[in-house]
Image (cartoon, rainbow, N blue to C red; front, side, top):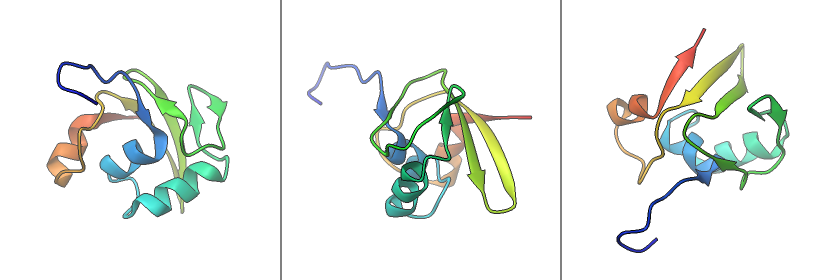
Length: 91
């Protein structure tokens, strides 16, 4: 991405990693590739699926299912406090 370009989407596995849903990007890619994550209620089996601001992700984790609304895209993986600004957890 060059300076001045606006990023309007991001790879699902990258976003999950930046949001600290799993510890490694490989774990995020595996989770996305299993076909269990839903983006706006539609199942996806592709780690390279595109995520946009406003999308709702349903993510199955061991012992729970979390639903997240994407509030922002990440430029890089930062500290946990920055990751919390990327989404809101829906109840």
